[in-house]
Image (tube, rainbow, N blue to C red; front, side, top):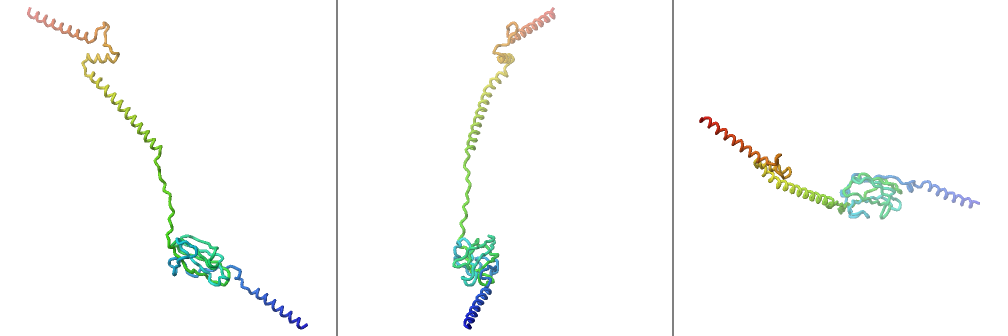
Length: 249
């Protein structure tokens, strides 16, 4: 009977120890908590410590940043890392390693400033995390090729030019022909203009229908005028002779 009681007592002590151990297990073993960056900001990759040639798979055309949550990698790991760059803005990192989840790598534009860094971690009792080293960019990013718009001669412009040239040529030809025709007709008209009155009358008659002007007796006007002038002259001679005869008598 006493032996049985001892066994029961030992069992009770063991059970109590297990319950006590479970009750005193640290809450941070499963819960994530937030910690700040240990180094003061702002920081540039080329001004921080001794740069490394390579940061995981960060390309050489970008600055690389390597962060570490210190401690046993089997107990401590990143859950989320939030960083802010100027320029570049905020980045949220949720994939970590290599080699373990307490390593984080971030890429930024060459020369960008790290202005803020906050991490959520689980495991351990960390007060901060570290910027282990940086990998400044060693290659210049290739510029994006830009398409240059090339203008080809417009067919419509050429057609318009040809049409304009043709129209101008036609107009010039027409104008030249008209001018030539006018100048060739004008001399004949001007040659007849200074002719005597008889000739002028004849020219005037020709414009009417090509015949000489006629009186009622079918005699030309010029001939009648000449005869009238001769009669007047003869009458004048006769009057002069008669006055001389009267003076002599």
